[in-house]
Length: 275
Image (cartoon, rainbow, N blue to C red; front, side, top):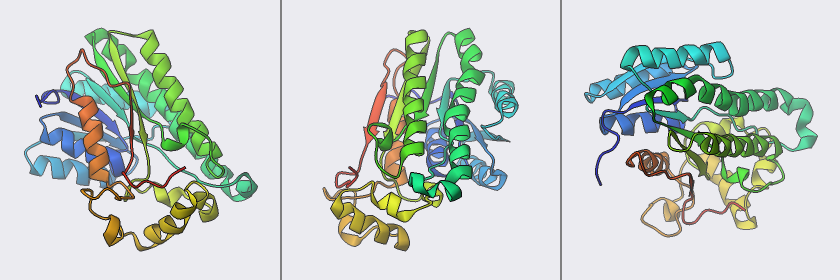
């Protein structure tokens, strides 16, 4: 497949870990110029140093996406560094899984989820909008979730934030056709992204799976290892997607000619047990 990533400037939030980190590295390998943004400076340094060690181009800026001023500074930094912003990957996010009965211990995490997943996505879109319109082209990729497709007990607040990501993305697409390409990504369970640390109540997390999955996934996360019978992505019963596989699909969305837009993509492991 032709390389449409080479030479593009990609601004990637959440780049210190998870999807953001993985996409940053893969895009740099394809010749993209990467601006990495995150609150975790040590993680950002690791991402950028890895890219540069492989002769890639990358810089970083510490950014809290819930702070509109910091987000504006992030976009300005990207333009000052590389002259333009071709692609925004809104990867920063939190996943507070809890029942409504957990409200006393969950409210702070819920507030942060709303600020990060909804306001953060909106702030980042707004920060790059004028630059992309002035360029005459751009691409914005936002993250929803499998839980943003239909509601589940235990994921009410998180799912609400991911429904918002879908609506923001689709509304933007309708406002600027032929100028800004938009994509909403629906990931399912992905190993080693750090999001599992946001789970407040494991019973709530278990309710998100089928009966069989509810038995499997707690053991999976406790051991942090994929069971042997499902650990090979060449096997049809692969149950929990690895980060590289997910990031490769995000790169597939980016690696298209400007005239082609993949507006939605849902990525699952073949043996996925989510409802």
